[in-house]
Length: 337
Image 1 (cartoon, rainbow, N blue to C red):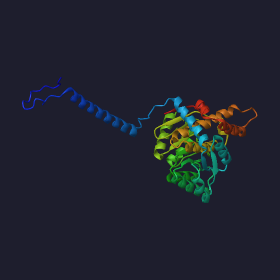
Image 2 (spheres, helix red, strand yellow):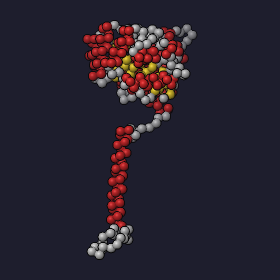
Image 3 (cartoon, one colour):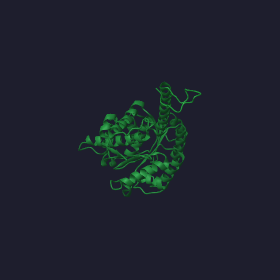
Image 4 (cartoon, rainbow, N blue to C red):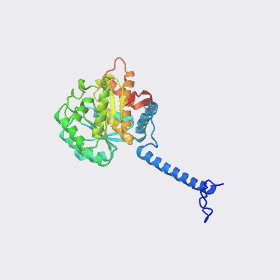
């Protein structure tokens, strides 16, 4: 049987005639090459665009990932170097221990480089600045950056004084922070170079509400993009964002504002989450914020009529101590934008 039958060449009776088996062989070879080409092209785009493993996660799957971030802290016991303020240093150490991490504190310039070298992360908190501690912050930050460590900045009270604002801005210029965590007034101050705060609390005029949520989310993403970091803006509604994605978190209680240092504790704990989840800084930061807010809810549920803010502080730390990934998965309240 012949597929092609052109005018015969009298000099060669086979010219223009292809046996079926020859046709099939060449066709099969062509198909094999086509399939190989298609496979190579697909793998190329999968690799460069992340299609190979890309998957739109359901909220339930996202919650499981946040729970995993918590569990990873307990599995790895990250050592965190804290240059934090004197008001809350003990609480920061205790909440790090409660979440499964290990704290070490040092702000002495001659000490910080050695200390941060043995850690996995650095938490810089500017709440009680002095010239010696500022020098220590720069030295520790430079050393941590050279080692590829996770670094967090908590710009406590930025906008309240020139020293705080200039120190925070200067640190951002010199140190590649993984996360910057503060209230909305502090973060706006860093974005603009100046601002106002109510002491170390957010200005009422800056408060994130449901009415201004869209603009606040856009601000958070732009800030993260401009500074190549994750930003965590905490308040009644928490925002944790990188350049593309923002977690809008609604865990916590208003009564947490009656305790000094919940933000400082969160910064220490968040640094531990970053170290334990090095490839997922956004999810790690969001998980830490959810965990802290949930601890506030759980702690409040155990309060007795005679208890006050001192007891509440301890209840929150206890709630972190007993929290596991499953508890966080069930209690996290957030949406992703």
